[in-house]
Image (cartoon, rainbow, N blue to C red; front, side, top):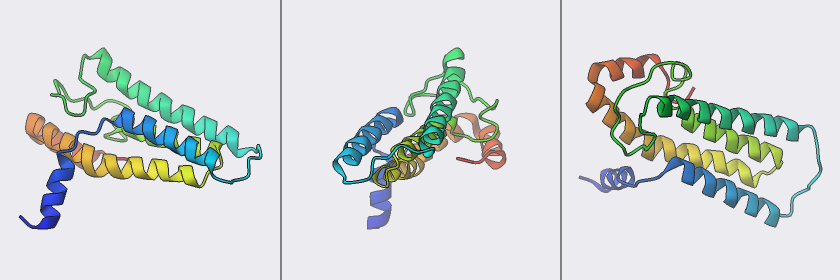
Length: 158
């Protein structure tokens, strides 16, 4: 195994909990935003940012509610008991993560913060490269061809 494969394997073994990562990035972004010398004018984009944040949080909670109603674990490291392929899982395989990323983007727009734009980017990269591959391996092992066909039909993000 070369150094790149070893680093990739180590990264996949990290247990990152997406809601905690989201909260840390949001808090860090807000703190850095208020420490940075940026203009603090109120403008129309703030309404758009709030709307985006609300849509993102709503999507994430709706998708999580589907899991909760069926008593399916929302823990990305847990053992899936079933596989869901109803809306919003028909247009994205990861609506909970997509919702959290959209909410972070909405907060960055609301605060009109260049610094906070890094938060959804970091969230996306960490979730896409570390959390989701592990979940997909677990789902493919558990649900086989049914899950692989679903992967072929529905995009990971959008």
